[in-house]
Amino acid sequence: MKGVQFLVAFVVLALASSFASASDPSPLQDFCVAIDDYKSGVFVNGKFCKDPKLATPNDFFYSGLNIPQNTSNPVGSTVTPVNVAQIPGLNTLGVSLVRIDYEPYGQNPPHTHPRASEILFVQEGTLYVGFVTSNTDNKLFTKVLNKGDVFVFPIGLIHFQFNVGKTNAVAFAGLSSQNPGVITIANAVFGSDPPINPDVLTRAFQLDQKVVKSLQAKFWWDNN
Image (cartoon, rainbow, N blue to C red; front, side, top):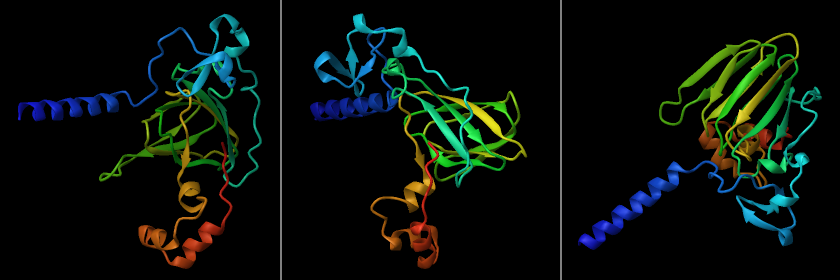
């Protein structure tokens, strides 16, 4: 009996430990520049590492985040990511960055980052931002941000930004993962491939099935 109790306690502690370290693991070396050639590297954190002796300053560099992006699209915004795909040296470091451009009344639609918290800084314009807590409260936290303001979106929670100003807006955000991921809610639910059975969405959203099928037939824009 004691052996069983010990085993149960061990499993619970192991699970608790895994949940506690759900974000990017801490690196065990100074850096791990990501490469695609498995023959010349060691696999760490989803990428192969370049031999540190062959690393260059360009492995830790990105240029162009000062350039405004085209926002002429259905949602009126464009996200420019700077993660491990753009800077190989970010591999294992647990951080990344994005620039977000918004046209007047453009938005970064409700979405989540499954692997990262986010801290947003408004460089230009006025943004209405917010996030919703998990079930069962589903409490909405919102704020109107002006130039120089900062707001935090906790990991995994649905959040959004909306340019309520009459001019373009620009924001920069830091994320606590080298590859935070993004799930845009409308795209995932109504634009999945293959489509979710309309009967599921009809009942889940309490909509007429014709409305669901109409939404599924739309082209859902990815602003990332």
